[in-house]
Image (cartoon, rainbow, N blue to C red; front, side, top):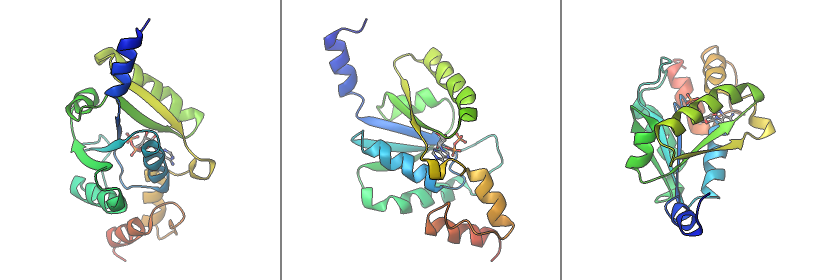
Length: 173
Ligand code: ADP
């Protein structure tokens, strides 16, 4: 049981939410989750994984720059920080207690549930919250976007306009 006083304290220190990911590159699905999180929390820190196990198309600096450009109008409310190492340590370093993840389909659930349980084991003061993807974004992943764009397909419905340009550059167009 959590006492009333402790609960109040918890809520008070939970005004910053962390949204971690590879963002290689940022998609409309990510943008939606980040903006919806900002509708709940006062401040959102987008944590860009600097050494994802998957080999990245965009460098860490490119991924950070794309996200910063996209959310430039939310200065002071959304910040973008790259990190490596344990997520719980990163969350603590930005004085947050909440991790937000997007859930696309039932298939995302197994991995996400495992990650949230591991993170709770490492630090049970940090909670993971899930926002379900909008139906129209539920098929979008960075992997699919990269595959289609590099083969010359149209991804303008899947990513912000700036990202379309960045992908065209990568594809040498
Ligand atoms: P990771 O490599 O850690 O899975 P991603 O960059 O793929 O990171 O995704 C970051 C976060 O955004 C994750 O919580 C992921 O579930 C969520 N996400 C990815 N694509 C979508 C989408 N189309 N709609 C909603 N959320 C998404």
